Length: 479
Image 1 (cartoon, rainbow, N blue to C red):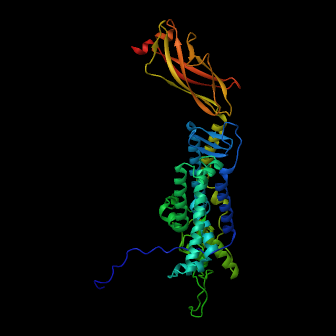
Image 2: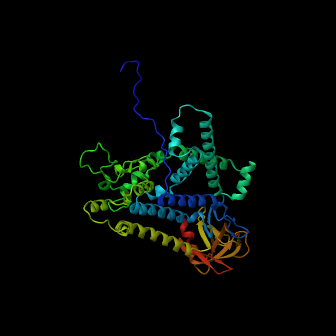
Image 3: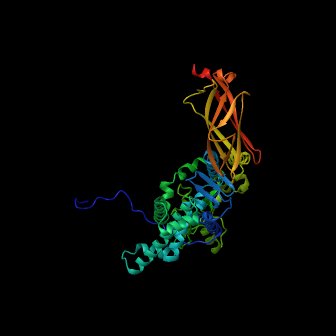
């Protein structure tokens, strides 16, 4: 190589993948899942749910301004974040369960990256044609009017899908009809426009251009999944002992050469959204979408060979079939100690959340003693402690709450700014009430260092009660 020759590149340019159209049961299943998941995502913010005049009527709403999460009849308060944490734990255990049983079915069917990429490929196929037409267009060096028109049309549709994606996301955080009106009139908060712009751009780039690159390089799950799988995990595989040696019979073949069922038509490769060859064995890039199964079964039917050359199978089945034994029943692969353990953990967390949801009260309180000063000595010698009591009314209407104490009988409870011990708490809100507990000079609590006290609150409308334990500081605390 002369000094004037350019240095060879160490990296090959990325070659886009153009999957061919395929039909079959797994492709149809992916269409159904795409329709359901996209329908849920785009339509859920528009579902109405009547909670009363003082509460929002959006069925699913993450109200950050008021620190509430509404899900149909369920309302989650900030201090109840353990419900959200429990759901995240269930999601993680569910991912472990499905991966250990069926491989990366989450990646192949319900991952947002997969769903939106499928949608973008569908749009691309409608506008530019199937795989061969898209390949010719991609390899066409000259940018003529037709190529520019097709590309611009495709990108505009992608941007509209990305805009709808970002728009649907912000509707989960505010009343959807009101926010839509504000967005169209330019009156929405800049955060809403910024969020929509970011999600529009990422959806456009990830679904339109990055595609399999996100799954291979950005997503950590391909590298974690190996710990979830074993020899009994059902995943997409190629029956090498049946398909090899691959190829169509030719006159130039060696005498006595018997070809396998695989005719090397490349149909399984051409339909793969990850651009891999499943005949090379299990690979990190495989998302278990099973489109190669549909493509191969279609070819097998046309050439009169049995279906299942590429199929859902386990590594343990491979050894059995090579030895001439039938594969195990599918339920023996699914119901094994690992999956049973994941199912038990998943169900336990779900039952615990349901139990916590049904036993939680509509009335709650927290008590925070005011420690500066620890106590106050009144003119008659009695001792007074101050507490900040936060009352929570989780119902949809104002409720009268009566406060009382349980401790030394001589101790008295007083409310700041209120005559008596009854305070009205507005609907679906928390109310901060300053409370004083006074112990007479002669009471034992007045001279003791600390006396346990229980503050009760009762809903006068339905009789429901709640309490918190605290302590009363007497003169001994100041010594």
